[in-house]
Amino acid sequence: MLAGAYMEDKHEIIVIGHRGASGYRPEHTLMSYELAIQQGVDFIEPDLVLTKDGKLVARHDMYLSGSTDVSSRPEFAAKKRTLEGHTDWFAQDFTLDEIETLKTVQPRLTRGQMYDGMEPIPTLEDIVTLLKQHQKQGKAVGVYIELKHPSIMEAIVPDIAEKLAVELNSIQKMGFPVYFQCFDADFLLKISSYTSVPLIYLVEGKPDADGHYYLNEDLSHYFGKFAGFGLYKALLINKDGSLNNVVDTIHNGGGLVHVWTVRDDNVPKMFNSVQQEVKFLFEAGVDGIFTDFPDTAIAARESK
Ligand code: G3P
Ligand code: CA
Image (tube, rainbow, N blue to C red; front, side, top):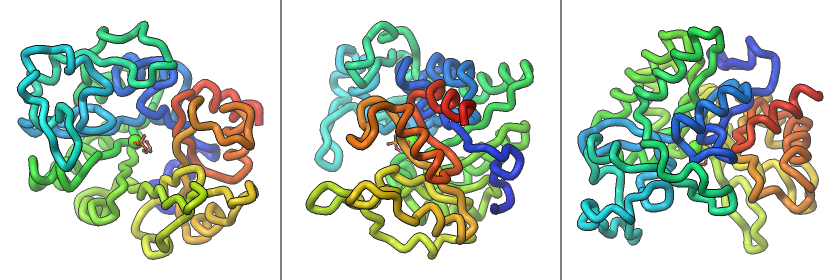
């Protein structure tokens, strides 16, 4: 394993609370991260975007309509616009003061709306404060940060790689385990000049004509450069449902394999439940799992 990778210390698969415990609470809220911590995660996973005034806040992406009440806020009606073919309200058009007035909602309707309108959008600083509260209680929960749309974020804050690295280094110095993940390998290479926090390259692959995902790039190019890879879980499975050798290949190259995302609405047909899928992934030898249902993954890990 590479230096800085937490598997060395824990000797077990890490469970990452994807957007918190987002199967149970609106994603990327302090209440969602809090529940994930209560359920026993090793890491909480904030996706970060920038506001107009350059502050880092937790949203899955810069589009605000799906996960907040922005569309019902008349004072922000004029901010709706089209960017790169997508019409929405964009995080980067809001100052921190403005964005903090929004209330979060559950984007997946099947999960219930009982917590809608209750929570604000947290800043990275709010998230670190939450971790510190738990640190006092003896729980060293880590933070597994993703920067969304790095090239668009660089248009807002040109030296975002350097600035974000300062944040990552500072959180690590406080004693919290930290990973940084990104879909953009060039951004990861850039940030690697400023931080020794382990870096995870997110890889989705591509679907073929039948919808089967395959790896469309040579990951060995990054062996030794990144701590590991955050793979879309479908990349582990051949067309006939059997396991392929991607996990072994990455391990042989010295990297970690973290897979995303285990949740209730995308369980492959070959499994009957989230629990069964988690067990399969554990047996496939992955080093970490991103899941909206951390309690299920932790229960499966404990029963191993
Ligand atoms: O970061 C791993 C996984 O979260 C990537 O997918 O779209 O949920 O950020 P997404
Ligand atoms: Ca993510």
